[in-house]
Amino acid sequence: MNVGDHLCGLYSGDVERDEILLAFIEAGLAAGDKCICVVDGTDPAEIVTRLATRVDSPGFAASKQLDVMSSAAMYLRSGSFAAVEVIGSWKAAMSDVMYDGRFDVVRAVETWSRRDVVPDMQELLLLESEMNRYLPLYPQVILCMYDLGRFGGGILVNLLRTHPQVLVSGMLVKNPYFLTPDELLAADGFRQGGVPRSKPTEAEEWYFDVTTGST
Image (tube, rainbow, N blue to C red):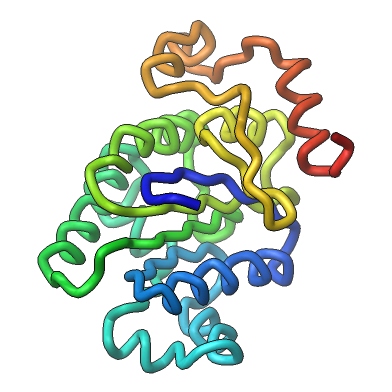
């Protein structure tokens, strides 16, 4: 895992989510990174409590090395979900960290379960794609986590295409179907208000293989 990485993690239910989420944050805190967690469907205070079984999460929160916030607080500041506004929120958060001056790297994690925030799928796809332009602006690593039970397979395949790497069973896998922001915007399906469907069978087979360990 390196600075500038944009990772996609897949999980089923809160227990599996926490296994990945808490380990990711714990490693960041141990490394001295600023850690930002945006959680959907769970009270942020619960994440701090669960993390306390591993580290002094209340202490890290008090020192502002750890920030845990709800998805609504991050993504619905204007009342609706828009990719350009979310990017603006992330830029503001990163600027605050850089101004603080205590942290060399920011480690951020987003969990998506479509419970508190139910985004338009095209806007979400655009957000995830545009994050690849935004990431090089700051020393950061971002892990985007999606609940398999709350997103359909077809949607997840397209979301996977916006991430250069996928986190599966603790291992990073390079995504051969990754689309750059320009490639996504040029795709016929996206221009027509949908999502790109180039080589859907191959992409779906790859998605099935990496998520089930069939490779």
